[in-house]
Amino acid sequence: MAKVAPSILSSDFLNLGRDIRNLAVNGADYVHIDVMDGLFVPNISVGLPVVKAIRPATELVMDVHLMVERPIRYVERFCQAGADILTIHVESDSQENTLAALKRIKELGVRPAISLRPVTPAQAVLPFLPLCSLILVMTVEPGFGGQSFMQDMMPKLKTISQYIAQHNPECELEVDGGINVETARICRENGANVLVSGSTYFKSEDPAAYCRALRGE
Ligand code: DX5
Ligand code: ZN
Image 1 (cartoon, protein in one colour):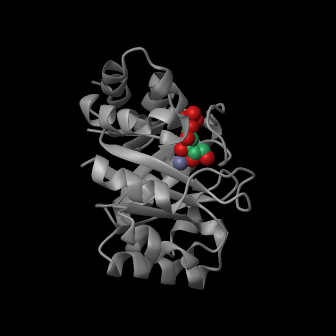
Image 2 (cartoon, rainbow, N blue to C red):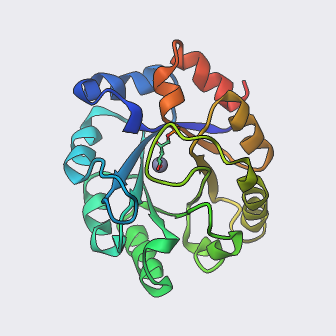
């Protein structure tokens, strides 16, 4: 069964506590938190204080997506702030530093994950896959909610699902960007088992039914 990870980027920040508590009520599996530094992506969102504030407010898995340059500088602090899954981008530092950051995340008892921008090919995951608990395939250009789903990412998603089956079958495969009931189905058919949804989840009139529909129930 696929999991649903609502992205709080599209929540009502003035009522963040209420929106976080509703995630569990609506049957979400993960809380997806987008951290942007204005350098790796042309937007600035939330950081460590917000991750720390959310931690005691939910028992859901905190899925923290770092869109920051040289994330190795921050991984310890995000682990200490309460992340359960910590995702870094393969494009944000050298291979050596990315490997070192993933190892550090694992040592701290947090699930290490990597993400790929749309332009980055499937093979880019191979050096990191044995260390990862999750691979995040971006289905929009990272930086903003509410963009259109890039269906041309599906061959890459399928290839990565095959790599996972061969090399690390426990690893989860997540998609992020432009997810709705229809695009979630396409992603599930191509191997995704964690579905991030920001704007469509928070605009939904019946988020519990929407979560079930994303899973294909
Ligand atoms: C974009 C973020 C996403 C974003 C998705 O860079 O990583 O998590 O919130 O938003 P939607 O679901 O609106 O495309
Ligand atoms: Zn994200």
